[in-house]
Image (cartoon, rainbow, N blue to C red):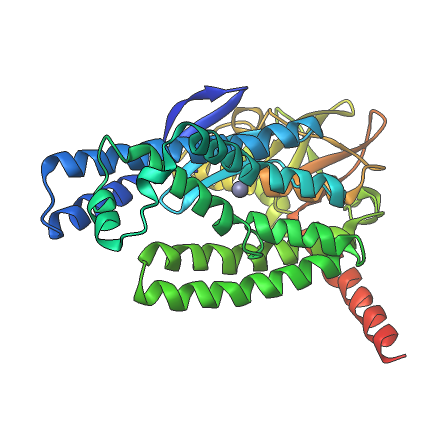
Length: 373
Ligand SMILES: [Zn+2]
Protein backbone atom coordinates (compact mmCIF):
# COMPACT_ATOMS: atom_id res chain seq x y z
CA UNK A 1 0.00 0.00 0.00
CA UNK A 2 1.33 3.44 -0.87
CA UNK A 3 2.35 5.79 1.91
CA UNK A 4 3.36 3.06 4.34
CA UNK A 5 6.34 2.97 6.66
CA UNK A 6 8.15 -0.35 6.95
CA UNK A 7 8.66 -1.43 10.54
CA UNK A 8 10.45 -4.69 9.91
CA UNK A 9 9.95 -8.32 8.99
CA UNK A 10 8.57 -11.25 10.96
CA UNK A 11 8.82 -14.75 9.45
CA UNK A 12 9.58 -13.14 6.09
CA UNK A 13 6.44 -11.00 6.19
CA UNK A 14 6.85 -7.25 5.89
CA UNK A 15 5.20 -5.35 8.73
CA UNK A 16 4.26 -1.81 7.78
CA UNK A 17 2.15 1.03 9.11
CA UNK A 18 0.07 3.30 6.88
CA UNK A 19 0.42 7.05 7.35
CA UNK A 20 -3.29 7.40 8.21
CA UNK A 21 -2.44 5.60 11.44
CA UNK A 22 -1.11 8.99 12.60
CA UNK A 23 -4.66 10.33 12.28
CA UNK A 24 -5.80 7.75 14.82
CA UNK A 25 -3.11 8.86 17.29
CA UNK A 26 -4.07 12.47 16.62
CA UNK A 27 -7.73 11.67 17.22
CA UNK A 28 -6.89 9.98 20.55
CA UNK A 29 -4.84 13.00 21.66
CA UNK A 30 -7.62 15.44 20.71
CA UNK A 31 -10.18 13.27 22.51
CA UNK A 32 -8.04 13.26 25.68
CA UNK A 33 -7.49 17.01 25.47
CA UNK A 34 -11.21 17.75 25.17
CA UNK A 35 -11.73 15.63 28.29
CA UNK A 36 -9.18 17.89 29.99
CA UNK A 37 -6.83 15.01 30.78
CA UNK A 38 -3.19 15.48 31.81
CA UNK A 39 -0.16 14.96 29.58
CA UNK A 40 0.56 11.79 31.49
CA UNK A 41 -2.89 10.42 30.65
CA UNK A 42 -2.40 11.29 26.97
CA UNK A 43 0.94 9.46 26.93
CA UNK A 44 -0.62 6.40 28.57
CA UNK A 45 -3.45 6.36 26.02
CA UNK A 46 -1.06 6.69 23.10
CA UNK A 47 1.17 3.96 24.52
CA UNK A 48 -1.93 1.80 24.96
CA UNK A 49 -2.92 2.17 21.30
CA UNK A 50 0.60 1.17 20.24
CA UNK A 51 0.58 -1.96 22.41
CA UNK A 52 -2.95 -2.79 21.24
CA UNK A 53 -1.81 -2.58 17.64
CA UNK A 54 1.04 -4.88 18.62
CA UNK A 55 -1.71 -7.37 19.50
CA UNK A 56 -3.32 -6.65 16.12
CA UNK A 57 -0.03 -7.54 14.40
CA UNK A 58 0.00 -10.84 16.32
CA UNK A 59 -3.62 -11.41 15.24
CA UNK A 60 -2.70 -10.86 11.58
CA UNK A 61 0.35 -13.11 11.99
CA UNK A 62 -2.09 -15.75 13.20
CA UNK A 63 -3.86 -15.57 9.81
CA UNK A 64 -0.64 -15.32 7.79
CA UNK A 65 1.25 -18.15 9.47
CA UNK A 66 -1.76 -20.47 9.27
CA UNK A 67 -2.09 -19.63 5.56
CA UNK A 68 1.61 -20.39 5.18
CA UNK A 69 0.92 -23.93 6.37
CA UNK A 70 -1.39 -24.28 3.35
CA UNK A 71 1.33 -22.91 1.06
CA UNK A 72 -0.25 -19.48 0.72
CA UNK A 73 2.36 -16.75 1.16
CA UNK A 74 1.68 -13.31 2.64
CA UNK A 75 3.41 -10.25 1.24
CA UNK A 76 2.82 -7.86 4.10
CA UNK A 77 0.81 -6.89 7.11
CA UNK A 78 -0.37 -3.28 7.03
CA UNK A 79 -1.63 -1.39 10.06
CA UNK A 80 -4.49 1.01 9.33
CA UNK A 81 -6.57 3.08 11.78
CA UNK A 82 -9.35 0.49 11.39
CA UNK A 83 -7.04 -2.40 12.24
CA UNK A 84 -4.60 -4.66 10.46
CA UNK A 85 -4.72 -6.14 7.00
CA UNK A 86 -2.70 -9.23 6.12
CA UNK A 87 -2.20 -9.34 2.35
CA UNK A 88 -2.52 -13.06 1.71
CA UNK A 89 -1.86 -13.98 -1.89
CA UNK A 90 -5.31 -15.60 -1.90
CA UNK A 91 -7.72 -17.26 0.48
CA UNK A 92 -7.71 -21.05 0.56
CA UNK A 93 -10.57 -22.48 -1.51
CA UNK A 94 -10.97 -25.47 0.73
CA UNK A 95 -13.62 -24.51 3.33
CA UNK A 96 -11.79 -26.26 6.16
CA UNK A 97 -8.56 -24.44 5.37
CA UNK A 98 -10.37 -21.10 5.06
CA UNK A 99 -12.05 -21.73 8.39
CA UNK A 100 -8.70 -22.37 10.08
CA UNK A 101 -7.02 -19.34 8.49
CA UNK A 102 -9.95 -17.09 9.47
CA UNK A 103 -10.24 -18.30 13.04
CA UNK A 104 -6.48 -18.23 13.72
CA UNK A 105 -6.50 -14.42 14.05
CA UNK A 106 -9.15 -14.13 16.79
CA UNK A 107 -7.65 -17.24 18.44
CA UNK A 108 -4.44 -15.26 19.03
CA UNK A 109 -6.42 -12.59 20.92
CA UNK A 110 -8.15 -15.30 22.93
CA UNK A 111 -4.73 -16.58 24.01
CA UNK A 112 -3.52 -13.06 24.89
CA UNK A 113 -6.71 -12.40 26.87
CA UNK A 114 -6.40 -15.73 28.70
CA UNK A 115 -2.80 -15.04 29.69
CA UNK A 116 -3.72 -11.56 30.96
CA UNK A 117 -6.72 -13.00 32.78
CA UNK A 118 -4.46 -15.41 34.63
CA UNK A 119 -1.82 -12.87 35.66
CA UNK A 120 -4.21 -10.04 36.57
CA UNK A 121 -5.90 -9.61 39.96
CA UNK A 122 -9.33 -9.50 38.28
CA UNK A 123 -11.37 -8.88 41.46
CA UNK A 124 -9.58 -5.55 41.78
CA UNK A 125 -11.12 -4.29 38.53
CA UNK A 126 -14.43 -6.09 38.44
CA UNK A 127 -15.83 -4.21 41.41
CA UNK A 128 -19.57 -4.22 41.91
CA UNK A 129 -19.76 -0.65 43.11
CA UNK A 130 -20.16 1.50 39.97
CA UNK A 131 -18.63 4.57 41.59
CA UNK A 132 -15.49 2.72 42.55
CA UNK A 133 -15.32 1.11 39.12
CA UNK A 134 -15.43 4.53 37.55
CA UNK A 135 -12.62 5.70 39.77
CA UNK A 136 -10.45 2.69 38.94
CA UNK A 137 -11.15 2.75 35.20
CA UNK A 138 -11.72 6.42 34.30
CA UNK A 139 -8.35 6.81 32.56
CA UNK A 140 -5.61 4.44 31.52
CA UNK A 141 -2.61 4.38 33.85
CA UNK A 142 0.12 2.04 35.02
CA UNK A 143 -2.12 0.19 37.45
CA UNK A 144 -5.01 -0.62 35.09
CA UNK A 145 -3.10 -0.74 31.78
CA UNK A 146 -3.11 -4.54 31.50
CA UNK A 147 -6.78 -4.73 32.42
CA UNK A 148 -7.60 -2.35 29.55
CA UNK A 149 -5.45 -4.50 27.29
CA UNK A 150 -7.33 -7.60 28.44
CA UNK A 151 -10.69 -5.92 27.74
CA UNK A 152 -9.54 -4.69 24.34
CA UNK A 153 -8.46 -8.18 23.33
CA UNK A 154 -11.83 -9.61 24.40
CA UNK A 155 -13.55 -6.89 22.34
CA UNK A 156 -11.27 -7.66 19.37
CA UNK A 157 -12.37 -11.29 19.51
CA UNK A 158 -16.07 -10.42 19.74
CA UNK A 159 -15.89 -7.75 17.05
CA UNK A 160 -13.97 -9.94 14.61
CA UNK A 161 -16.46 -12.75 15.00
CA UNK A 162 -19.35 -10.58 13.77
CA UNK A 163 -20.32 -12.28 10.49
CA UNK A 164 -19.49 -9.26 8.33
CA UNK A 165 -17.74 -10.72 5.31
CA UNK A 166 -14.85 -10.09 4.50
CA UNK A 167 -14.11 -9.72 8.22
CA UNK A 168 -13.00 -12.88 10.04
CA UNK A 169 -16.48 -13.83 11.26
CA UNK A 170 -17.80 -13.46 7.71
CA UNK A 171 -15.05 -15.72 6.37
CA UNK A 172 -15.85 -18.31 8.99
CA UNK A 173 -19.51 -17.97 7.97
CA UNK A 174 -18.65 -18.46 4.28
CA UNK A 175 -16.49 -21.47 5.07
CA UNK A 176 -19.41 -23.04 6.92
CA UNK A 177 -21.84 -22.20 4.10
CA UNK A 178 -19.38 -23.73 1.60
CA UNK A 179 -19.92 -27.08 3.23
CA UNK A 180 -23.48 -27.04 1.89
CA UNK A 181 -23.45 -24.58 -1.04
CA UNK A 182 -21.08 -23.88 -3.93
CA UNK A 183 -18.32 -21.38 -3.27
CA UNK A 184 -20.00 -18.78 -5.49
CA UNK A 185 -23.34 -19.13 -3.69
CA UNK A 186 -21.69 -19.21 -0.27
CA UNK A 187 -19.73 -16.05 -1.05
CA UNK A 188 -22.82 -14.30 -2.40
CA UNK A 189 -24.77 -15.08 0.77
CA UNK A 190 -21.91 -14.12 3.09
CA UNK A 191 -21.36 -10.90 1.12
CA UNK A 192 -25.07 -9.99 1.33
CA UNK A 193 -25.05 -10.43 5.09
CA UNK A 194 -21.74 -8.52 5.26
CA UNK A 195 -23.26 -5.56 3.44
CA UNK A 196 -26.28 -5.62 5.70
CA UNK A 197 -24.04 -5.52 8.76
CA UNK A 198 -22.05 -2.71 7.09
CA UNK A 199 -25.21 -0.56 7.04
CA UNK A 200 -25.68 -1.32 10.71
CA UNK A 201 -22.04 -0.32 11.42
CA UNK A 202 -22.58 2.88 9.45
CA UNK A 203 -25.68 3.74 11.44
CA UNK A 204 -24.01 3.12 14.82
CA UNK A 205 -20.85 4.85 13.60
CA UNK A 206 -22.69 8.03 12.67
CA UNK A 207 -23.79 8.43 16.29
CA UNK A 208 -20.93 6.97 18.29
CA UNK A 209 -17.66 6.24 16.57
CA UNK A 210 -16.26 7.52 13.24
CA UNK A 211 -13.93 4.51 12.98
CA UNK A 212 -16.98 2.31 12.61
CA UNK A 213 -17.96 4.33 9.53
CA UNK A 214 -14.59 3.51 7.95
CA UNK A 215 -15.04 -0.16 8.81
CA UNK A 216 -18.54 -0.06 7.28
CA UNK A 217 -17.09 1.27 4.00
CA UNK A 218 -14.30 -1.32 4.09
CA UNK A 219 -16.77 -4.16 4.69
CA UNK A 220 -19.31 -2.97 2.12
CA UNK A 221 -16.89 -2.65 -0.78
CA UNK A 222 -14.74 -5.57 0.36
CA UNK A 223 -17.76 -7.86 0.30
CA UNK A 224 -18.82 -6.63 -3.12
CA UNK A 225 -15.31 -6.89 -4.60
CA UNK A 226 -14.67 -10.36 -3.31
CA UNK A 227 -18.08 -11.64 -4.35
CA UNK A 228 -17.43 -10.47 -7.91
CA UNK A 229 -13.94 -11.98 -7.84
CA UNK A 230 -15.19 -15.39 -6.74
CA UNK A 231 -17.87 -15.33 -9.46
CA UNK A 232 -15.30 -14.41 -12.10
CA UNK A 233 -12.86 -17.08 -10.94
CA UNK A 234 -15.67 -19.62 -11.15
CA UNK A 235 -16.30 -18.63 -14.79
CA UNK A 236 -12.60 -18.96 -15.66
CA UNK A 237 -12.06 -22.21 -13.81
CA UNK A 238 -11.54 -25.27 -16.02
CA UNK A 239 -10.80 -23.12 -19.06
CA UNK A 240 -7.29 -22.72 -20.34
CA UNK A 241 -5.42 -19.77 -21.74
CA UNK A 242 -5.67 -21.16 -25.27
CA UNK A 243 -9.43 -20.46 -25.27
CA UNK A 244 -9.03 -16.73 -24.62
CA UNK A 245 -5.75 -15.85 -26.31
CA UNK A 246 -5.16 -13.84 -29.47
CA UNK A 247 -3.45 -15.90 -32.14
CA UNK A 248 -3.35 -13.31 -34.90
CA UNK A 249 -0.56 -11.17 -33.47
CA UNK A 250 2.27 -9.16 -34.94
CA UNK A 251 5.67 -9.56 -33.33
CA UNK A 252 8.38 -6.93 -33.61
CA UNK A 253 12.17 -7.20 -33.59
CA UNK A 254 14.44 -5.67 -30.92
CA UNK A 255 16.23 -3.66 -33.63
CA UNK A 256 13.01 -2.26 -35.17
CA UNK A 257 12.69 1.52 -35.16
CA UNK A 258 9.77 2.96 -33.22
CA UNK A 259 8.27 4.54 -36.36
CA UNK A 260 7.83 1.07 -37.81
CA UNK A 261 5.81 0.02 -34.78
CA UNK A 262 3.71 3.19 -34.98
CA UNK A 263 2.82 2.22 -38.56
CA UNK A 264 1.59 -1.17 -37.36
CA UNK A 265 -0.49 0.48 -34.63
CA UNK A 266 -2.04 2.98 -37.01
CA UNK A 267 -2.98 0.38 -39.60
CA UNK A 268 -4.23 -2.26 -37.15
CA UNK A 269 -5.93 -2.72 -33.79
CA UNK A 270 -3.04 -4.07 -31.70
CA UNK A 271 -1.73 -1.99 -28.81
CA UNK A 272 1.04 -3.96 -27.14
CA UNK A 273 3.58 -6.12 -28.93
CA UNK A 274 5.71 -9.14 -28.24
CA UNK A 275 9.33 -8.53 -29.10
CA UNK A 276 10.78 -11.74 -30.51
CA UNK A 277 13.84 -12.85 -32.42
CA UNK A 278 14.29 -16.28 -34.00
CA UNK A 279 11.16 -17.46 -32.25
CA UNK A 280 12.48 -16.45 -28.83
CA UNK A 281 10.59 -13.89 -26.72
CA UNK A 282 12.90 -10.99 -25.82
CA UNK A 283 10.45 -8.58 -24.27
CA UNK A 284 7.13 -6.78 -24.43
CA UNK A 285 6.63 -3.38 -26.00
CA UNK A 286 3.79 -1.51 -24.35
CA UNK A 287 1.94 1.23 -26.19
CA UNK A 288 2.34 3.39 -23.10
CA UNK A 289 6.16 3.12 -23.35
CA UNK A 290 5.92 4.06 -27.02
CA UNK A 291 3.82 7.13 -26.24
CA UNK A 292 6.29 8.13 -23.49
CA UNK A 293 9.21 7.88 -25.95
CA UNK A 294 7.39 10.07 -28.45
CA UNK A 295 6.40 12.64 -25.86
CA UNK A 296 10.04 13.06 -24.89
CA UNK A 297 11.09 13.26 -28.55
CA UNK A 298 13.05 10.03 -28.45
CA UNK A 299 11.58 8.55 -31.60
CA UNK A 300 15.13 7.76 -32.71
CA UNK A 301 15.14 4.90 -30.18
CA UNK A 302 14.83 1.24 -31.08
CA UNK A 303 12.31 -1.23 -29.70
CA UNK A 304 14.95 -2.87 -27.47
CA UNK A 305 15.59 0.48 -25.72
CA UNK A 306 12.06 0.87 -24.38
CA UNK A 307 10.73 -2.68 -24.19
CA UNK A 308 9.94 -4.38 -20.90
CA UNK A 309 12.55 -7.13 -20.58
CA UNK A 310 11.03 -8.63 -17.45
CA UNK A 311 8.53 -10.78 -19.36
CA UNK A 312 6.17 -13.25 -17.75
CA UNK A 313 5.25 -15.91 -20.25
CA UNK A 314 2.39 -18.31 -19.79
CA UNK A 315 1.61 -21.73 -21.24
CA UNK A 316 -1.40 -22.21 -23.53
CA UNK A 317 -2.51 -25.13 -21.37
CA UNK A 318 -2.42 -23.07 -18.14
CA UNK A 319 -5.65 -22.38 -16.32
CA UNK A 320 -7.24 -18.98 -17.05
CA UNK A 321 -7.48 -18.36 -13.30
CA UNK A 322 -3.67 -18.21 -13.23
CA UNK A 323 -3.65 -15.26 -15.58
CA UNK A 324 -6.56 -13.62 -13.74
CA UNK A 325 -4.52 -13.70 -10.54
CA UNK A 326 -1.40 -12.49 -12.35
CA UNK A 327 -3.28 -9.51 -13.79
CA UNK A 328 -4.80 -8.72 -10.39
CA UNK A 329 -1.63 -8.92 -8.33
CA UNK A 330 1.03 -7.72 -10.75
CA UNK A 331 1.30 -4.50 -12.67
CA UNK A 332 1.52 -6.44 -15.93
CA UNK A 333 -1.46 -6.89 -18.20
CA UNK A 334 -0.04 -8.46 -21.38
CA UNK A 335 1.49 -11.91 -21.62
CA UNK A 336 3.11 -13.93 -24.41
CA UNK A 337 1.61 -17.42 -24.62
CA UNK A 338 3.88 -20.39 -25.32
CA UNK A 339 3.26 -23.99 -26.18
CA UNK A 340 6.40 -25.64 -24.91
CA UNK A 341 9.04 -23.22 -26.21
CA UNK A 342 7.06 -22.05 -29.19
CA UNK A 343 5.29 -18.69 -29.21
CA UNK A 344 1.65 -19.29 -30.16
CA UNK A 345 -0.17 -16.10 -29.12
CA UNK A 346 -0.71 -13.43 -26.53
CA UNK A 347 -3.28 -12.73 -23.87
CA UNK A 348 -4.15 -9.45 -22.17
CA UNK A 349 -6.63 -8.03 -19.68
CA UNK A 350 -9.24 -7.35 -22.38
CA UNK A 351 -9.14 -10.97 -23.56
CA UNK A 352 -9.83 -12.21 -20.06
CA UNK A 353 -12.61 -9.63 -19.61
CA UNK A 354 -14.22 -10.57 -22.93
CA UNK A 355 -14.02 -14.23 -22.03
CA UNK A 356 -15.77 -13.54 -18.71
CA UNK A 357 -18.48 -11.44 -20.36
CA UNK A 358 -19.38 -14.07 -22.96
CA UNK A 359 -18.98 -17.13 -20.81
CA UNK A 360 -20.49 -15.39 -17.79
CA UNK A 361 -23.66 -14.66 -19.76
CA UNK A 362 -23.92 -18.35 -20.53
CA UNK A 363 -23.53 -19.18 -16.86
CA UNK A 364 -26.22 -16.73 -15.82
CA UNK A 365 -28.68 -18.11 -18.36
CA UNK A 366 -27.87 -21.59 -17.18
CA UNK A 367 -28.48 -20.63 -13.57
CA UNK A 368 -31.68 -18.78 -14.56
CA UNK A 369 -33.19 -21.70 -16.43
CA UNK A 370 -32.30 -24.06 -13.59
CA UNK A 371 -34.00 -21.92 -10.97
CA UNK A 372 -37.16 -21.69 -13.09
CA UNK A 373 -37.38 -25.45 -13.45
ZN1 LIG B 1 -8.49 -11.13 11.44
